[in-house]
Length: 304
Image 1 (tube, helix red, strand yellow):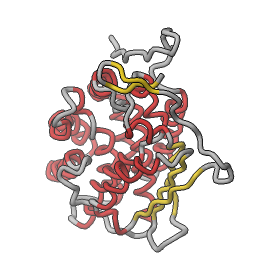
Image 2 (tube, helix red, strand yellow):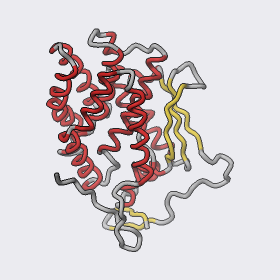
Image 3 (tube, one colour):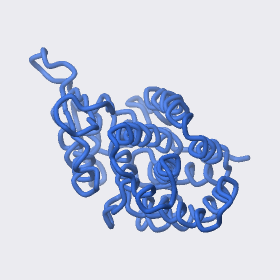
Image 4 (tube, one colour):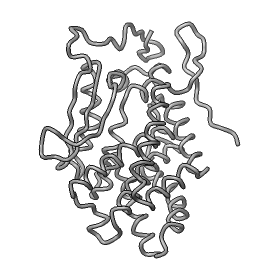
């Protein structure tokens, strides 16, 4: 089977770089896979859904073409299979902390399913939320819903005997997919988890590829300042979830505000999630330099 090839960013001497995505981001995806499997293990339907999605050639095709569109054509950051796994890891970590704190899930409250089904909704929603980018970035939320429908129909038919429950679980997943970019904001807790988990994937590894291809704006620079994002129990408030963002430069604050905080505030998770931003080198007098020089070329600033 042919593979989608992303453009290789030119190095400063004109040579081609060998890897289409940074090693640290690929390593993050491998760690994410381990976390997903561990957290999904107590939930058999969630674990089976994960295996079905990562083994589905249609899903893989959508992920790869989405990356070709967003990175190769628009100089956006990664929206492919690595992003899907990383965000799924964040989603299940958030779900686990919410479940341990007895936060009610809408899948359970509505009678559509149990905690396993709620985790399945969050997992499938976050892994399919960006596949609509395969056609175009504009309107990708609705296109993701359209592309996800036949995938979910096949997978859920194997996981649920009851046709009505299949439809209910599918509806919850599609709602999360449609609402992940706050247009409209999610109404369900599981959809809020998908949106916030998506906002957590903002580390420098994800942003490196478009930056090396010439993207230079506050979104790219601020993302390069984010070193690490961790999900853990909160030690600072009554909220059960803390998202720790570790940055090497204060420019990262823009990324946190624009990408993460806005999503938290617009979802049901605003009552349960706090954000803690910290510098990884507070003892140093000077912050890490992200950019040394830039020049205007063909109407755009580019790093030199």
